[in-house]
Image 1 (cartoon, rainbow, N blue to C red):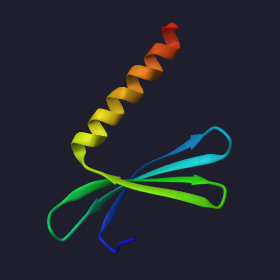
Image 2: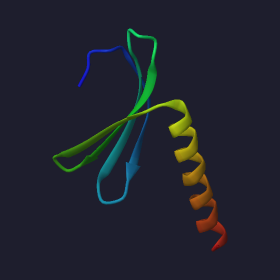
Image 3: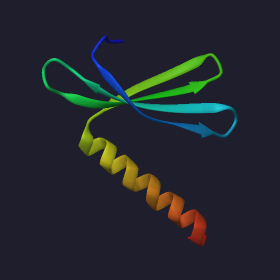
Image 4: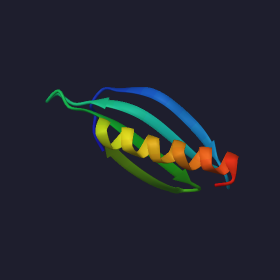
Length: 72
């Protein structure tokens, strides 16, 4: 993908032996993106998103998780 400097943000164990890894990637241009690497067995899916997309995605995920707790 790229040799831009990256900083590990975290890793999540997901159902069915999936792993989700988050890294901050800083490009020479000054752009910083969040790289999500989803591993499903031998298959990898890699997405790089900007801060507004990460915020929107995070809010949707939190809303969904909260609804699961309350049964909405």
